[in-house]
Length: 167
Image 1: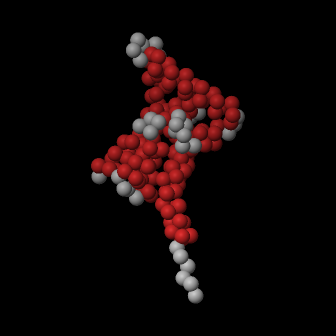
Image 2: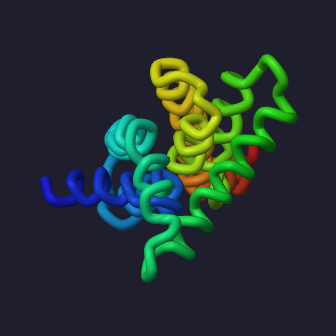
Image 3: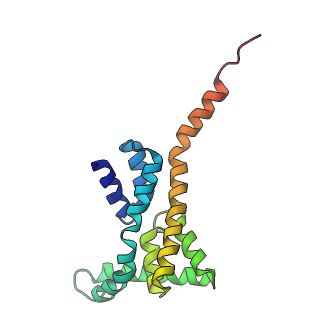
């Protein structure tokens, strides 16, 4: 049970998200990749509603505070910059742009940044969460495929290196 809980917790951590949780679950904890995918997606989605509803407010509140102001201002600028970039590139296709932004499993393109950008753009709660969810599903598939590549190549190598009986 501990390994499943750790996978959920890893998937909830910004930057790490499911990009790190799925490989950790499959390679580290030896969890079946389908189960790892499902629990990593769930873990990655748990913070999304809270980020949408509260992150912008907390960042706005803390941006002028003595010890946390610089970091909070940085996060706010990052979210605004990401949101404006998405908006400029997508036009009316903001839902798809957000979905693909989250769906590309690279650092700073995950559910945390995407949700913050959607909240700054006032995209709407349901639409934002759905776009992020679809993006997380896509990112999970891509990460799972990458995690499974060694097994796939190993299987193919066995097929092509097996000697054919002589007649």
